[in-house]
Length: 399
Image (cartoon, rainbow, N blue to C red; front, side):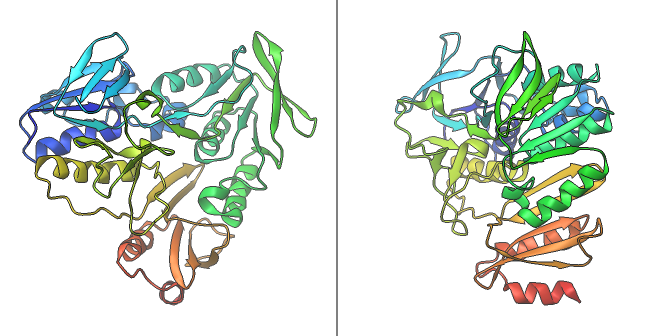
């Protein structure tokens, strides 16, 4: 067992790893390194309750009992800038170093940015608490809002801004929102709710640039249309925060490559959460699951792997949820464009139903609109070695 473990990343994955290490009986030294000044906080409310209900920041705290009980050293506001993997030596932004016996990488992702508009005020991304503070301050003046990107973050922010009474337009180059997560049919179903609430969509159009001097005043679309805007929220995806690992000799390809227990190509170095791609028997392509639940589940595995070496291969079925207006939507599994879809326990015209997705005769994914119990039951079945047939799942949940 190592005497000193360094955890790089002071958000959900990092905190849950520290907690799991202590539960596994690790009594040695733990140093947590975080680029942000804040102690670990919950990110999902940043696009919802923090904006709409003006939550106080204390409600975002991830540690219920406080971090003091974990007996860890917290180096906050100090990003790691390099790793000498053989020596397990980290260099921080202030030039100081941290040497440990094991290193856990939990740096998450950074928001992707558009290649223009950097010189203008009023163009924001939403990834951190500081981003959310700026956004909450900006929407207080009731600006006209354009959201670029109709993924989960973009759609949640659009709903939140509309709830605050703002004029909101969503721009998305694909023919429907949320296609990558829900498919086109369910994406359009969500868009219908947004339209009913007053959100305007410009689908099938990209963004060619922004207008304004000093501050943004408009968004220029690829079809030539100009959308007036005093606030632009960019939600065009995220990239793993791994650039600082260049030269560390760790295998990286759209994330840190790991085995099914979180071990990297360097002995004593582990990775989890949004920055990592784990081997997964159910998903040979090794996707990065940028989900809250995945980070929590992986932290337990990494802690066991470090402390006792007893962790078995972890092959989870991804699970994620989103809240938009009165819709509560949860997803399990992975959906592909050609998957067959069958709606059960309701219809698309309602706000409460279950959509099952099938591929090659097997259930591949489930989307639940206000149907949490059957979704969690089907997630367990998806996790079984042989899964469940699509026909059997449809028969069971159509009765």
